[in-house]
Length: 113
Image (cartoon, rainbow, N blue to C red; front, side, top):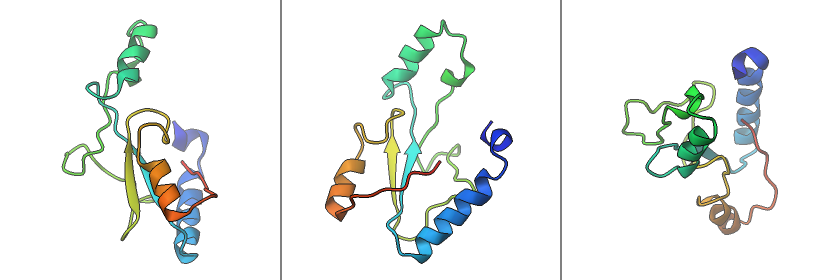
């Protein structure tokens, strides 16, 4: 798990987010939204692994109305920060991310997570 392998992850990410907010940097959150009905890679990955990967058996919803939806205490959007749902591992493929970056004139990004 991330917490075991990187024990200071939460602390470091929170510090990075705080610095970005103080510097008035545009913060864009990309959230996993993995569901079998719109994430074809789940089915394909499960098939390729012979159904032996438990991590492909569960969906990760990005619906704020869902009871399964939750943000980590150390990493939660605030104010007008944008949240983009991704349906695959690639945050730039079939999401609004590239459009938002272009519209905002953002040429450099810091990726965390």
